[in-house]
Image 1 (cartoon, rainbow, N blue to C red):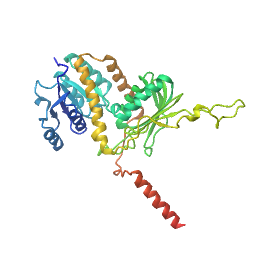
Image 2: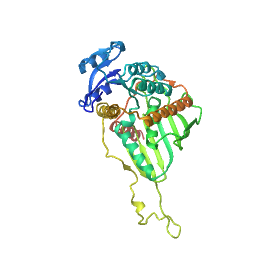
Image 3: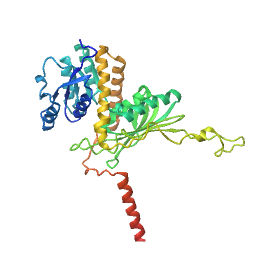
Image 4: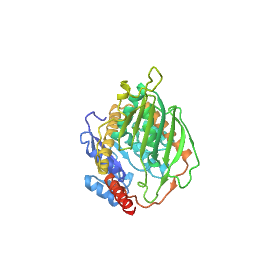
Length: 372
């Protein structure tokens, strides 16, 4: 029996994205204690185990029969070509609670939930990005907006890598998925980076654009965006500019008419004093490295603490289980409409800061003036 104040003993499976889990766990010393890493034995895995001073296991059969409460499975599941599905199920059969990184197939999720019930454990699918601070703020603000106004349409875009989290973000914002449906708007060509779908989610009309491209040699790079979402209501629009970016609220533009029927654009109506666009939270100029050192570990901390509360309560959240099953089905339906990802092999990107961009523009202007 796990006591309320007891630290849960946790292992992390996988040391690529698993490093973010390791960082998050290290920042929760009163809730968790890392007792091992399960990986293939790469130099990176060895370095991680040495850095956190824990054993490195290269086979699940090497794990001790006692002494592990939670397994974080940060290995690709079968649906995306990895061994995470078998690993998660094996851990559950060993009576180890499992939190697994997205995505998984709905059939896999149903199997995990059955295995968890049989072994008296808990299983949770982690879509990760809804706990990133800007996304979290977007979801909370969307819920507030939809308590006071009706959603009119959604415009959303993402890379295929983070399509499942996009589905979860929308589901959490709207309070569910039903009814949903998606159809491609055009037959995408090889020259088009984004594939477009239209349909509805939660009964709200949606236009969805997905960069359905993958570079097998460098699968974690070459995305043009992660998440960009606009939820338009009859009172205004809420926008997430980027997964790690800004959350903006834009009141709907409306100008009342005078008694003679002319738009009262110079009047004293209070609507004219509304800000054109407002930041939901203060602007923070974050360098990219803080995404990895702060925003991502903070997301892991939130998801792990929620999972810990579930374990300590000993109660299954059947409503959340059903929600996640539905999210998987929505993701699968979208994937079926998109078809297989286009294989690309572009050169490495050369990101520019605004100052660099403006400097180049200034130089070009000087050259144009000199040429004339």
